[in-house]
Image (cartoon, rainbow, N blue to C red; front, side):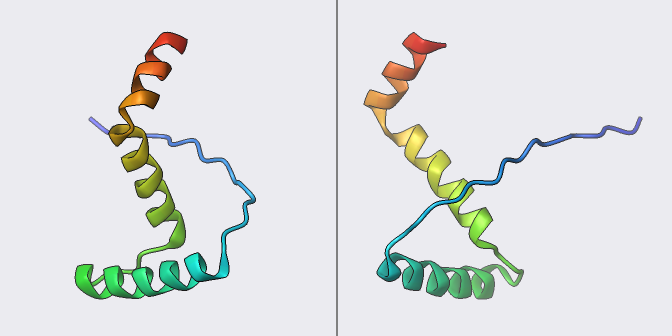
Length: 67
């Protein structure tokens, strides 16, 4: 049976420091070479934020009380 997964994306507008932007661009180059595929800044930011949310125990505790 065909399964369709629909993901909802939102566009955000944000600012980052120029030094962070340079690191992000280098990381995109690095990860693309390592995985032999195109990696976008969207991919990296999505992954990094989810990693932050998972590792921040204070946020996880706080978030449980708000659910």
